[in-house]
Image (cartoon, rainbow, N blue to C red; front, side, top):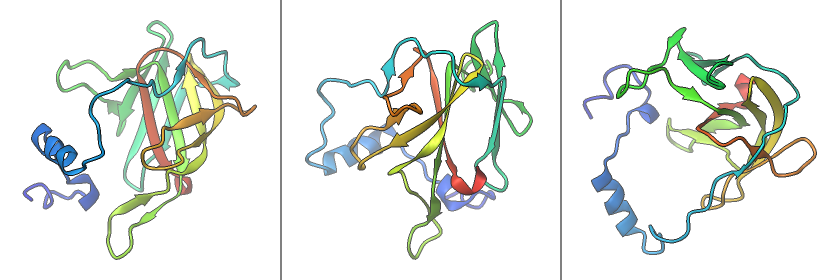
Length: 174
């Protein structure tokens, strides 16, 4: 495709559309697009966290990084990328999130390809909200199973209501 020759790795050069997604759903006879929506998280008062976290940064790869800084006025983490504010293309506003999750996972390559393969069965990570962080554990028991996030005591994590950013980062980048 025309984007693959612009210096991006193959896994970053696949695109889709609503039409193609609809065709894919039609091809899978047991996939339903109706029914009751189940929230990804248990929402409520998120607690005070373990320690201060006014700044967050992590690397996705040898060339890709992300950073957030907590803005106490808006009570949100503002996202930076490559050292500059990352802006919403539609509004021009800096991306802002109430919650940031950094989930560590084993990352390798799919057999006989150069496509990235993420082990999304379980791992550790961090939950950031309100300028503080909490260590977490997470599980996903199958492709169709929901993501479950737990605090240090093993209880399902209560997440502050608002927009959430979820990063899956290689354990090699931890």
